[in-house]
Amino acid sequence: MNKFEKQLEKWNNGILRGAQAKLAKCLQVTTATVALWATGKRHPSKGYVAQMARLFGLDEHSVERLFTLTDKLPTGNPRPTIGWALQDSNDTTFPALRGEEKMVSLPVFSILPATYPHFLSRETNGWWTIPVVWAPKARFLFRLPGKNDPDRLLFVEPSTTWQKGKMMLGKQARTYKLFRVEQKGKQIILYPEKGPGIPAQQATSIGVVTRYFGRVKFTP
Image (cartoon, rainbow, N blue to C red; front, side, top):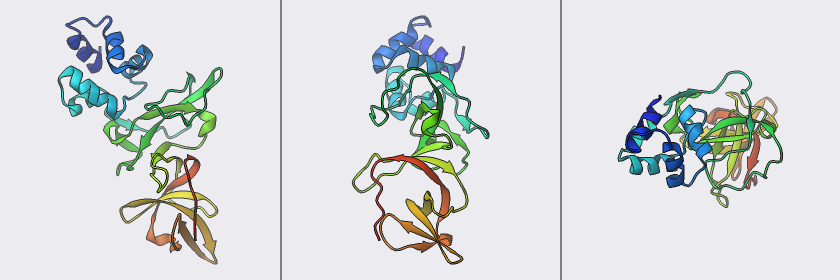
């Protein structure tokens, strides 16, 4: 019995049986979702952690410690599972799936942890399980709000070098930005979504954007 199951048993008056279904009903999720949390195959989002903290009479940090805290992205191809797409939000971006497809779970970040590819579960904005074909090279999803699209989501393939002809996620000072990478003679120039280009040395490369949802428009 893991720490989460022990807490469920305590919360359910010392009885583990039926505790997952009871919690699922309180959180308005499926029993299968709670089972994935219990087996460590899925991480609850911050919203669900906050709700569980209120139900269990614990602080959010204590609830987070019920789950695996330290994660590391696999160095090879993600091992797919078979099943339906699961999401930690009510986002309707992804179309409904038909039949069984190979799936992969990817963490969602709004700030990339300094220790990446090692990171703490509490540093994510949740996990999405999506079809492998949607993101064959992406290793994580990144929320980068745009002026007209606060929920813009990027699929990112990590890269520490700028790649010409690509749209890439980078960091200039303390700000995350999208750049269009071009080569001018022997110099790599980064063009942000708005404003003049800058030399590649003035920003840090995070990764290639392999797919995105939301509005992306580069203007001179």
